[in-house]
Length: 445
Image 1 (spheres, rainbow, N blue to C red):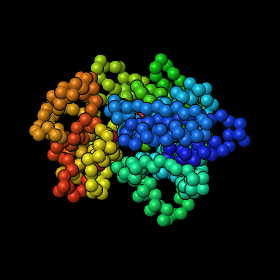
Image 2 (cartoon, rainbow, N blue to C red):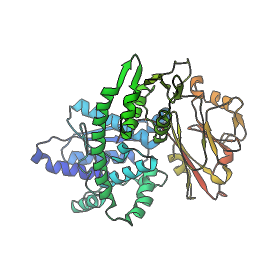
Image 3 (tube, rainbow, N blue to C red):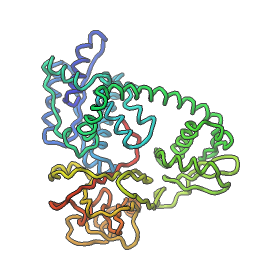
Image 4 (cartoon, helix red, strand yellow):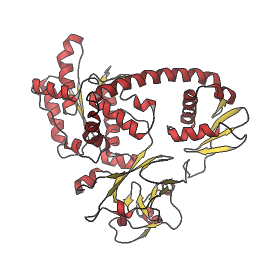
């Protein structure tokens, strides 16, 4: 329970129904320590739980430090730590269910965000109403209905001011994009929720179908996966894509997935594969064809070298570039007043730059000998190697740091570490470009 409208209504509804369903309730709240009001809000939740006679567990953690360590946005880091805390409380109290307060508008916004990130039936399935012991009782209740419930029962919810800041994608989707889409269909949130239900059922069926093809076509030999090429070619296109994705996930050095464009490149190569030729893919995955089988295996590890490095990618204009360990989003945004506190809230994995000083195509690459840049605030140039040394960045990590480079060869951003002084936003800036880095990881909703 955050104390916001959704979680407050969820708690009140469950409390009202506890006798009818013979359930025992306990309350859990996680303080992200990101806002001055956070401690006071935690006490409000504790007090409300006390009024209801319910036990309340309050946890907190260093979200900002965790975000830096794990290369996550502040929102993703907060979600990770919150779920870890909630799952720990579930275990320690032997609870059977964990009820979360996602509602219908959250569902619609999540689907739209997944659609913007790229095609994925699983992403378009939205937030599952039930996933194991996690339940979402309000998933079909609209924000308008929740506000009406608050007013009817005179419940005073906490409103997080960061929900109105347009520096976060979800907020921009909710505040800017959704109102425009609703001009075309006032029942948009309901229609998206219904579409998500269709996608979930079809995804479940296709996964079961993929299991059957997998059992027929795929075998293991040591740490390698062997796929019958003749059987693969007989499979429907939708199954081919799922087989390739699953083979990659089970072979990669970490839990990763392929983007749609990567799956299509691999699938096109398999239309006329050359026997014996090996493809080198991110995270140490090697793929080759021996004349009868498609083989997925791991490259031989090199001491001190992370699989998938070095790399070099081009981005012709605003968009997304897939990297071995994540993705970089580049987008123009309206020029707004980038107050100092808003810039801080961007976290280390998002920067804004003066678009007028950036030349496309951008290059996203790892470091090279002789790299130099002008670290923001330093007042001069510095060798990238010396910059890493001053930060005490371990030597084995230095080849993994993405660099965003302008067409003229100037380093714009040492991702997650420092912006180049020459590209910072100033009073003379006419257009702003936002660069955001997102590390690959399974999404938890």
